[in-house]
Image 1 (spheres, rainbow, N blue to C red):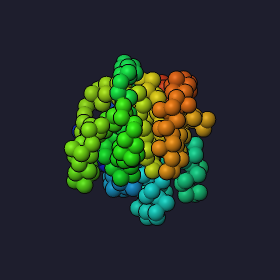
Image 2: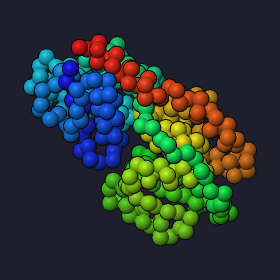
Image 3: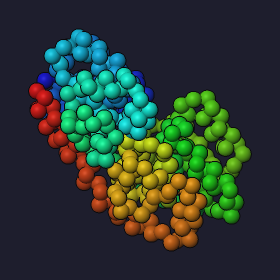
Image 4: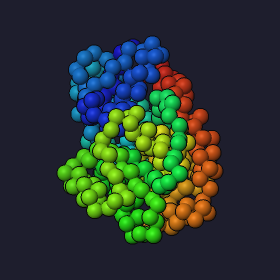
Length: 314
């Protein structure tokens, strides 16, 4: 069996789709399947195409079916597919879903976001991570909040520092922003914050190990996304034992669980941080609950589910 795992972005870029493509290729190769990654469809023979992203991956899907008419297509849905592109009415995305033999989503709740006619061929496979040897080692002072992820409006990358800037009495808190600015506007905003606010540091895009090491030194990490399929940064923090404060959206709930106490509602990050500062929130309990969720995201579990899916389509 030959499998092409297509990312809509160059594999050299540290974007979520390319990272996921690389992870899936490694897992399949470990299980004896001839898998390769590519930027779009590479036009080489393949029995199965796994396309990351229905909308941005649609050209790769149509090209694959044109050149490999008997080939099978699996679409691995992303958060922007599920919660933005398709709800806004993407015709090319809907056509790609119709073309697919199977559709993969990161959590059960996402199935109901898809068009009803394709839900029957949709399965849930939760993403795993490469092993992480780094463990949480927060500094005693200052209280460091890490915000990890490429700077994008959909992630509300500056919400944490905007909240802290309104509370000068929180003088022992620093914000460490880790992630590449994906456009000029976001870059300028980060530079202005770094220049004007001494409790804010922007590290830019880093290699994964460097990013993990900085996150591990933080006392708290925040994911404030408006939409998210399931952020690697959240799962990495869970794995290292860094407590997570997250916006209550399906992607975050899919990782942390319905009963996790560390969510904030829209407009309430200030109140959530105040509870942490006043020690009304038990961060050790947050860490324990996160650790209990980790078996759902094991490498073995994800690998087995992918193998079952590919065997079914063979």
